[in-house]
Structures are given as structure tokens and as C-alpha cells.
Image (tube, rainbow, N blue to C red; front, side, top):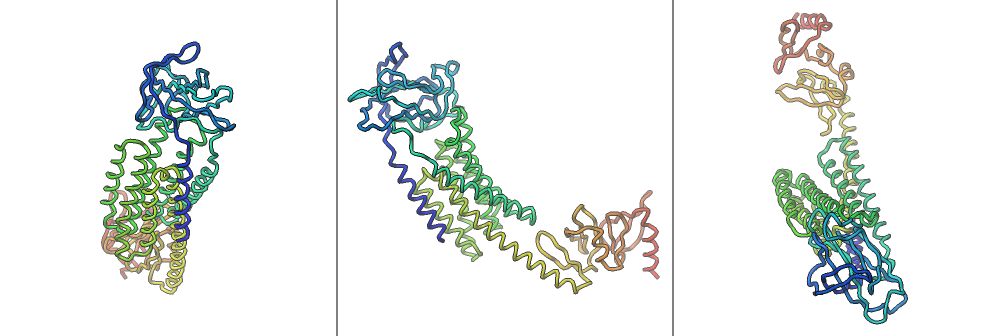
Length: 474
């Protein structure tokens, strides 16, 4: 419970810090050309919506007051566009090369920081002009420019944000490794789902942090945002699959199908942030349904799981702008790491139970102790028709048509089975107490038992088999 309280306070407090950013200036769209003494603008009109240079060349202008303190300033431009800027007719710099067509434009970086020299400022009003173009975005964005304005330089350090994100990423990768080891040992479906969830959340954390680590060319932004939504959607569907498998097994496939449809529909929403947030929110909401069924059925672990999903939804709806960027990774790590601990404890308990069963089985020579991924089963040897080798496992063919996989080798079993069992082929041990006849099939021999398919008999073992059958008939 203290983990949940800590995450709540941490994630709830961070958004208030970000909301204290300076406000972006008001912009006007103009007709413009680049002249020898700076840009020449005409017919300027206020921009009521977002600044959108997608598929065109766009000239914009804003009037700024001179700074009232000595702190250095810079122009920050972040988005899918190439840009060029002037302050009071003097060039500030360029990011790529904007142009009127895709052929003439040279794509710039997604983020550009253009420092402003103090000598460029004039007392009173200052004219800031930008030339933008975006012909290589790949997709059309609802908000192509994520940051545009003059703010103090340098920008607030994001080291704390990255440190926490990387810590969550490391925890998620550790959880993925742990669940992967458990799956390799026990072949449980739930551990495979949880390993996939942890891996996907860790990958999304890396992709989310990519913008702060690598200033990539803006055409790559469409691929990055598509990957973020796809990873979030995959996590949401896997979360529903885990919750349904754990708390509502009979409704697992209908719930997974519903999740695929509902989460998939988020691809039609405008804006990648909206797509990602709603994919996670809808996935968590759908996962809460089978968990609630588990609470009604008093399934162990259902109550804390439902409480955690409720926390996830509360924070997601309260601070949606931080869900995909930050809090999602903390919540995913906080969910998966306790599940890993619970799984390790459960496996330890199962191993102790298996050892106890093996100890009890030592005094039962009429039964074979079968170890598999499901546990330990004592199989009466009289019900075993044959033992067939299958690499590191053997298949026990039982009376009634049932079969079991046993984690043992054929050679090791030969000494554990009663004298009525004889090896008739390099990969087959037969129970002669259930044998009916030895029959020739062309140039091969087959041993027919009381039921099931006949067994192959190798030529080298045929004399010993005949001798054993004759002895049994006397």
C-alpha cells in the first residue's frame, strides 16, 4: 500500500511543476519573401489555432517585449518542420532549410534551440519572424509544432525526469528477465504474458525518452509516435489478457477480442498523445472487469489488483498529459515487480510440494512419479501401456487413451519400471502385461497391446521380446 501512496504523491506533484512554463507568444501568418535586409512581410493575420506548416511554406510573425533581466534568451522550436528565424531583421539561425516545395526543403531536426545575442534586442517592442515548412512529416499531425517561443536559456534540466524513467526502465527489464526465466522453467502462460508486458513497457520508456537523448531529423517523428501508440496498445491488450486469464479464465478469449477491437479503434482518434492515452486508459478499464469478477469470486490477489487498476485510471484521467510521458512507466513497474515477487514465492512453494510428493512416492513401487510443468502425478504402472522417448521428455501412453509428458529420459526409466516392462525399440518401452500379439508387417514387426496403436519392434530386440512373451504364456 505504501508503494501506491508514494506513486500517487509523486505523479500528482510533477504536473504542477510543468504547468509553470512561460506562455508562448501570439503569432500572425503573413505573406513573406526573404530580402537582402531580412524578410519582407505583408498581409499579416492573427493565427487563431495551431501553427501548422504541414504541406506548405509558412511565414509567421510575433511582437515581443525586450527582456527585463540579464538572463540569456533563446528561441525554441520543436516540431515536424524546417525553420529559419530573424529578430528585428537580423538572422538568428536555421534548422534545416525551409522551402516552398518538398524538393527545395531540407528537413531539419525535431528540436532547434537558437540563442539570441543581447545586442539584437531593442528597447520596447521587437519583431520575431519565422519561416517554416513541412513536406516530409510522413503523417499529418493535429499539433505539428509542440514548442515555439522565446524563453530563458538554458531550458530547465530534465535529468531528474530521465533518471526516474531509466530507473523504471531498468526495473521493467529486470521483471521481463525474471518472468522469462520462470516461463523457461515452468512454461506457464501467465509468466509469458507478464514478460511481454514488461518488455513492451521498457521499450516504450526508451522510445519516449528518445527525443531527450537524440535530436533526430523531424521525418522520423512519425515513426517514433507510431511506435509509442503501437507499444501502448500492445501493453493494454496484454494487460486484459493477463487479467482475464488470471481472474476470469472462461471469458479470456472474448475479453481479448473485445480489447483488440476497443484498443484498435483508438488509432482513429486525432493526435498521437490522445491515441496513446486512450489506448492505455481503455485497456486498464477493460482489465478491471475480469479483476472485479475475481473480487466477487474471492480469488486471491483480486482486491489489490483492482485497487491498483483504479489508481492507474485515477491518475490517467486526472493527469492525462503525463500518463504516456512518465507515470505509465512507474505504474507498470509498480504493477509487474510485485507480481514477479509473488510468482517467485509461488514457485518456491510448488517446488517444496513437489519434493514432498517425490518423498512420498519413494515408498510406492507400484506407481511412477511423473514430473511435468503442471506438478507431480503418481501414475500406477499397471495403467501404463508404453513409454515412448521424445528428446529430453518421454510420453507415457496410458490405459483409456490418455497420455502424459514426463521430464525424464528413456534410459533412466528402464531401471524404475517393474520387470513386466521391456525395451522393444530404441525409443519404446512396452508393458508386456498388456501385450496381445506380435505381428509381422512386411519386413517389420509390430507389438499389439490391449489398446492403442501397435508399437514398432527393432530386429535386434525381437528375440528377447519373443522369449519374454513365451515365458509369460507358460
